[in-house]
Length: 325
Ligand code: NDP
Image: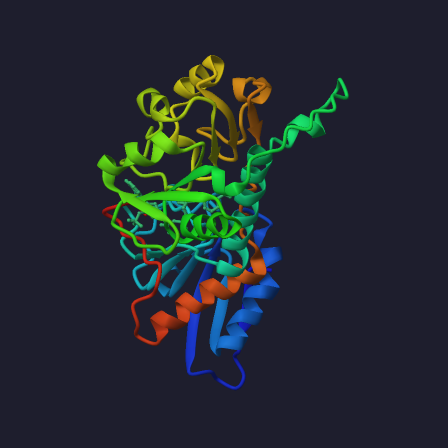
């Protein structure tokens, strides 16, 4: 099927043409939720899977890997609606002059990230591996510290970072956070700007990277900054692989300066079979699953943005192209 029609009869107030551009097979999982979300919002639509007449398209629902690289012919398109929260693979595309809206999906994406981060923080905080992997059957009753004794920092206090910081603070951790602009979040000690980074890293026993990949954040965690962290600190990276200098991280893991790294995202994905992260005893690899886009909730989020535009409002979560996120 290359065309799907929603809400045509009786004629709705708003009728749009939507191009769904995503990797092969994704439409099958989005057809029903997207149709339902459009119907619920009262937006009529013709949804096409290939753009034979690009100048007639009103919206592009976009995921990387669908083959769409040149946005120039979409002269009428009001917005490109990303199915991903991270827009680093599209934000710098020079042909993209239309508004770019990233995915913010509290019910799906944010909840998933909070669960992944909380789980992995608790693993390291409680030292769970000591009991899960206990080949010598040691009866070691050393109790783990309480959360209130543990300093955790979240780099990036956006939709995902702030939610994770709040969840960790709710458990009782001492949480600091870092962002580009000044923030005030109850219960979280917030620092900002490159000058504020040292203060949060110096105390971070566990650091969670939830920054976007931009020219300003690439290689942020380099040898010098890893050296600011307490000896044995743990890093969780569900943000983007490019935030970390891999060679510097491997050296810090080998020297014991960094105790463990749990990594969900990588410079190259899938992580190549020969990459040293796979076999490093102090690295846990998860395959970019920290927060998956869930069709049901993502479809509703995308249609909400469309409805805002149709109502003449500035859509929330518009990507700032100058900043790259
Ligand atoms: P947001 O845009 O809401 O938040 C980004 C945060 O990073 C903001 O707090 C922002 O600061 C901060 N930031 C950006 N640049 C800098 C900088 N140069 N210095 C300091 N702080 C900076 O993004 P989300 O929270 O929605 O998502 C964060 C990232 O998570 C995504 O970009 C993506 O890479 C990743 N992700 C990973 C997934 C996975 O499954 N592994 C799934 C979804 C997302 P400010 O608040 O001042 O703007």
